[in-house]
Image: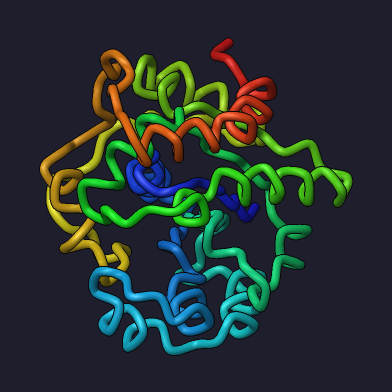
Length: 240
C-alpha cells in the first residue's frame, strides 16, 4: 500500500508523517515534490537553496521513485504531500497507484499559523483550492478518497487513527500514537525552520481553542479558502 496524504501547510501533516513512521511496516517520504516545485516556480522560500541542493531530482524522477520499489524492505509507504506543490509540470499519474487521503484544517488556523513564518501569503501558498481539485481528480480515477480533519485527530488521536486505518484497510498499530522527541532522519532538509516546535513533542497535541481572530488581508485570505474547505469537510470521516 502507498498512502498519499494530501495537506496544506501548518496542518498536522508532519505529525501524521511521524505517526506512520512509528509503524515497522511503513517507509515515509517528506514532501517529495518540494524541490521540483521551487525549481519550476522560482519562489524564494525559507531555506530554498538548501532544498534545491537536497532535492535535485526532477518531478518525473520523483514520481517514478514514488511508484517504484518501496525502500528498506517495507511493506507500505507513506507520502506526505503539500497540495500547493502540484502545479503544472508536476505529474499526478502516480495517484492512481496510491490510497489518497486528504487532511484538512480550518483556513483561519492555517493562515494564522503559516503567516508567523511566511508573512507574504497568497491563496496558492495555503493550497485549499488545489486540495479540492486534487480530491476531484482522485474521484475521477474511480477512487473514494478519504478525508480526515486535523481537529478531530487532536481531539481523539486514538479514535481517529483507528478510524483512518479502518477506512484504508490497514490494521491499527498503537505505536502510531507516540514518537521520540527531536529531529528525525526522514525529516526534509527544511526541518530546522519549520519543525522546531514539533521536535519537542512525543505525540499529537491536544484540542485547539477558539478560532484565531484576524483582520485585513489575512482574514480575507481565510475567507477565500472556506468554500474549498467546506467541500471536503462534508466528506470527512468520524471515529467509530
